[in-house]
Length: 123
Image (cartoon, rainbow, N blue to C red; front, top):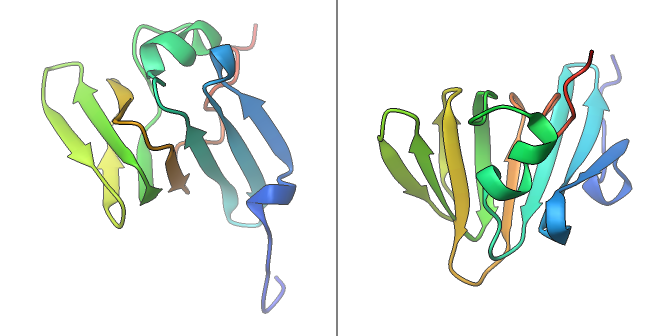
């Protein structure tokens, strides 16, 4: 392992666009696993802009991440909900929907759940 690593999401290893141009996931492949930065545009909603890609009824990725900018509402399948904003750390279990709140783009860094996020199911 290298002592110091510097990477930029602006030169990601992979970029996965969301439906209707509502953002993208920029993914870095690291020795410790994938790390992603999602950019969700105003009007983005998982059930509209990622569900058609994922092919599941709700988001089945677990997340551990940091909100850089914007506001995001998350609603679990059981109805529990929470809004996140800049500076918030989040942990979200699989089984949820989410959407951008307001008119500001959301930037979110996640080091747990983005490896297979917004990727069509294999098979």
